[in-house]
Length: 415
Ligand code: BGC
Image (cartoon, rainbow, N blue to C red; front, side):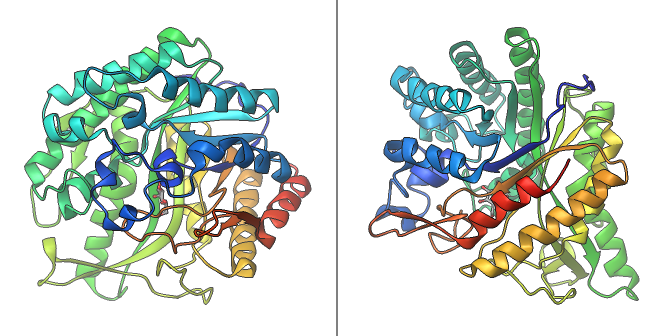
């Protein structure tokens, strides 16, 4: 584990993912969500990327997090598309020419269709297939120091193996545990692969962390469930990075303990933070757990129905600081059509971030989600997370007031 001063400049960035901007005919998600049938290229970023990268200059960010679309790079099991690799390299070159630090996500939810059909994550053969991809890109892609192996492994798992709402669409706890072990094994080996090629690489996952609270404080079952959920969702991965053991405790079940080869395989820690969730016991729900968003702080709910709870950012950063590596907020943002709300959301969260840094939490970067409006998983094109608004008929991009405000915030904060 490295914990030195290589992250000396605070990274002010925006984050995106390839599929959400550009789709891909070879990805599992292309046929998963019918919304994409009429807009398979989404914002057509694959063609318009140069224009979009100019927006980064307009914003004045010094970092950009984006992902590689695995299914474009390896559309068939035995076919590598060198043009797609060259395309992503071109993005990196443009960023470097403009002094913008690239942060590359290797896996952001989507898979090539052949992979998810033949080698879903609960099959051990998935490991070799993923690592071939990781080998390929790390030997071909140059100029990248910051790597995220997996975006939100737990969201991938909950969607893909509990709810079944994301590919591979399975609802099976035993297979979920196998899948998680294989995904984390891939993180551990990818960490080694990246470091064998890039001596000063900074590698992490992006972990979705939420503020979790009991629905009714006076109800001991609600409190117990909130505690279990907090441990599972926020902490169990942190402990696995610290010890190499993953302890999974589901409500009313025995603890499952599995070894995962990820101990210390972390150079910084990526935190994605959006909201707080309230939890209560409901015997009619899966595992007796019911989740709800409530507007407690009075800031309202976002267009996703999520509670706006800036203080939760401090909580999750505090938890994450026990890892003793620099932290980077790899995602934080709001879906809203109202740019004044977007501006307020951003300011409130960055105020909390500033307080955390002043109180000694080692945070080295903040990436706003997202640069332009995009495809939101299972929600379509109307969840407006972008600093730039996209007209999905003409595909024109237009700045919201939040874009100018973000530029101002970047200049006015002295981290
Ligand atoms: C994901 C993004 C997603 C965002 C908003 C994050 O959990 O990484 O892909 O668009 O949340 O839902």
